[in-house]
Length: 89
Image (tube, rainbow, N blue to C red):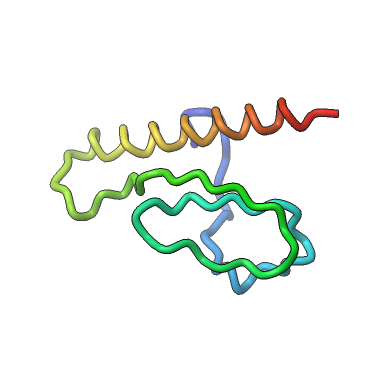
């Protein structure tokens, strides 16, 4: 993300149980190899199954691993930009 000028300092992964559903309008799940968490409430849901870029079961160089994360980042960025464009008022 730093390569794109996005500062993630202070950000962390959170458990879905720690998020108040009343503060969320849209849930996008990315799980492809695992079971997606259940989100309660009357929320809009999109499912974009993407392979986990952290291929711990594969022996990869740091550059190969970084490339997998770049590909996932770029795919998500493209999908988010398209979603934003289609929902613009």
